[in-house]
Length: 164
Image (cartoon, rainbow, N blue to C red; front, top):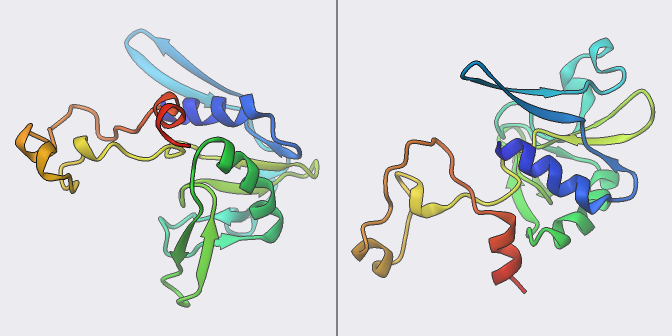
């Protein structure tokens, strides 16, 4: 569901020259499946060579081309997401990202720039992270609380209401 929310957010912004995958969530006989379209040419290449933005090894190696940074800067501002710096574990270089490190940028054989894996588009709600740091008032009110979902994130509407 979070991936679908991220896809919808970028799709609704309709950023110029940045594309998302066709995505659908299907509930069938008690199972939930997310299905996505395939980037043209992705099956013909090695995954490591395909990703030109983000990380495929959980943040150990992070890449960000100037083109992707340019394409993601405006949507990040519109979504109230701040750029952040990530340190590469392999060579200690610093990379600026406008999305989560798990998001990936891939250029398809059709020449289009795609952004995918948008599960963590919006920030996590620290009140529901087991090891989240919260202020004293939140601690007095019983936070952080355990939650049956592994990942709780803030809704886009909340960010729009409280971020200027």
